Length: 132
Image (cartoon, rainbow, N blue to C red):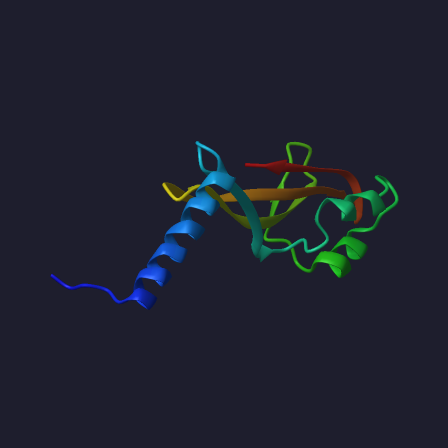
């Protein structure tokens, strides 16, 4: 058995005091912490939703959209025969919930936003966005 000296005992006692003070500040359920961090992993539309405010259906040109966002991720045809341009943003969401000192849960998910533009005669006639 190892015996501690007076200085070691004082250090251990102070450490125990600090631990009890910190635990009493947290209350009986512990300290709850929550953080949520979003990171854009893939972006074809760096402007996000604010960009949509600048579009006027029937007036905004397809060229202007292309100048702002670059080439669409995909182009298809609508049921009316118009071009449908699609831009995709992929966002990683990291969430952390903790009850100190007992629980630390970390979760990672992804959210996809798609921005659609219907083009007729080189003019945007409709636009919308979807999120998953």
